Image (cartoon, rainbow, N blue to C red; front, side, top):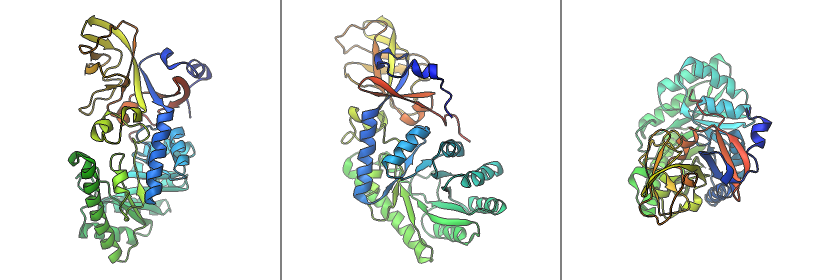
Length: 379
């Protein structure tokens, strides 16, 4: 499905990174592969499956790489558009960690479920269960279903307790639905934990709650084969609990400023594989310069700002759409128009979504070009 022409690829492949036209979204391939291997080791150590969430990069080649490196763990998607992009590019084990609502979306889900080896989706209410059952019956399929349980984020998901059991029974009784297990996403821990021990304790506490849900459902005579949990920050902690069968991190191959600040004991600048290379376009004062990377280059949907990759003497201070203000007041260096500065991205998922292309580099030379194929596919 690539739209890149041979000439366009030839003009970028094997270039030195320093020659790239900027701003350029860059991924250090060595760092990315180390990060994937680290989480594979975590999954192996805990005896759980690592199913990578591709909403971070939205690219089928990277999804296939993650699937291969996790020994066929499959992938997660967050939209049907992402599912379709992955399915059309050969990925055949997909979990949609999102509720499918609306006749058109349900028709698309049923169509896609017949195009891949396995496609599961998420429900958290009687309404989403009944809508999915009606669509599956109309299309003569059996839909694999995961019940989302609210672990404390209070976004979506049924509350633990009798309501969760009632919905599991409703799925189990539906003629065209297959109850596969629960999604117990413990993302609330990120807002509550400040230390490694707090991450460990709060994730364990959340998984104890999930185990209680599993016990309640199984006491009603319904097997719970899968317990899906975890984002990048919590997977290595939640995955230790024996109730967990699968972790679903997304940002882990790349990391970002958010992860760097959240978990400094285990994420360093060297672990941050996703950066943006910028060019200095103006040096209006001795203590300030401007680069060609602003809010349309770096997503600023969270409080974090970009962080310089290889230096500590400058600071990304402010942004407008195409301009980044850099504070150089603590630097002894003189800067000139045309200089290059590289920054770790603040939030990798939404930053990648601003770009058409991810440039993969090794040893400061371009080796891969990955289109952000599912960019804009929010439906």
